[in-house]
Image (cartoon, rainbow, N blue to C red):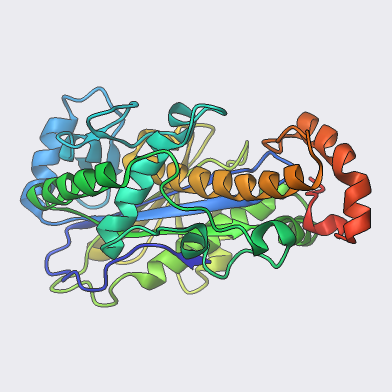
Length: 356
């Protein structure tokens, strides 16, 4: 697990509610990592949340239900409308489902603007190199050993600086704070081990995701001064799975977890005291909520950089080789093309190929 943002100097004096979004990138491919990411936010005080509720009721966008004891609603897109756009933009920071912001061959600018602004907002500066971003979490394989591209790749550093300043100002004005932005990267060898252990790749994804939720919750300020605060978590649904209670009970064994709903559109659970209730939803189209959208973008950005390193290495090994995004049909083409050179280099299959 890699924490890539989070400012320990922020003083959490009056958090009204915590909002956490979880999403993944790379669930379907046979090549490259699965990446699960989380973004954690807090809304500062009751008057701002109530104001947000009023505006969200007039907004066509999906809102996050701060359902708990008061039934308030908070749409961070409404809160941050001066700087954040739910669609691609050249003047604002686009925060949306990564599929809307990135298409192969179209460049990473829209993803970079949102992810690197998020990192700068938490760390005070965004990583300038791949190895700074990934740290020591990449496995010891040739395609990561010497790869260390400069960041940003497609956005300008000056525009990141300008957008970061505007984002910080908008957050202060709105009473919204980005506390944490982190990833869990699962590379092929570990991915195969997890799918073998849990039986299916869907179960492996669920365990990785809920493990990341637990890590984020453990990172939050322990006392939530001056009073406890409700916490609302949204995860994009894991395939067709509707039942998550046993999984949640495994990762939070000391809690009595209530099932509020289990259906195709949403599975909803809650635990804890009424003044510090934790609620978690697994819903379809979770990226309609800003915390999930930023998680989606962060996961996709990390995966795309990992695939660039992978393609850069193999295209140098085999001149004329066409790069791959790693999805099943093209992955088979790519795997066959590198097979001979892979044997010569004595690179193990488990470090390249995801079995499921």
